[in-house]
Length: 277
Image 1 (cartoon, rainbow, N blue to C red):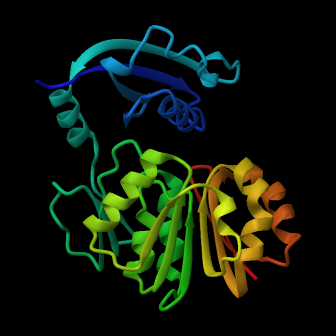
Image 2 (image 1 turned 180 degrees about the vertical axis):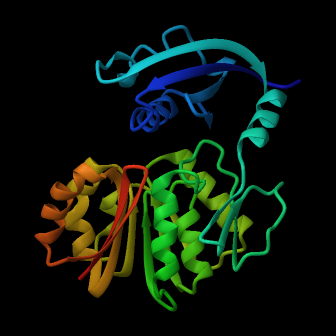
């Protein structure tokens, strides 16, 4: 017998960054699958994990910064699977990288990444992931040591291996992301990626040539000293997860550690910055 799910359809204004925060918060209280749409997100939780107070402590719903409305209904698990397939469309980055689910046809580009995202962040659809792929396309990573911090689905670690990196650590504090990254690493036949569950405290005595950190602004600011201490001379750090208006505060913090801004990419108000040590 299929499990019964409870579905919440959230309409969110402004959509970003509220939707991203909402997904993270819902994941903390037991929601396990999400489908983003033009108006917000549909979130799914197993009925056995649900209770009438499940949304009581969700910050976004009680914040004056955002307007959020929602509708709730019961839904069978089989319906969720078809919903997921219907809403997850394959994408391509610069005509060189395809990011698709297992059930999509391979477009035979230079790089083909197969991701089953479940509830993890990082399908390539979000502007920040897309920009990080663009940075990595231009970067020489052959035989280099790479860190993917806040790895989500593992997509950026997987792409780094496809481009020739020979030792990649992928780290995420969220257990579901950790498990999903392990699955996607296996799915893409990667042999040089180690996935860990945790935070920047795992980086003690580690050294990397390339650090990828696609996380929210506050975590980047808090952990920047750790990232800088882990970066080899002439190493590169790629940052995203914030808006153009956040660049001054990010740049001020990064500059403290002798890192120089080398490139900036913008996509729908989101930005991604490349720094060199």
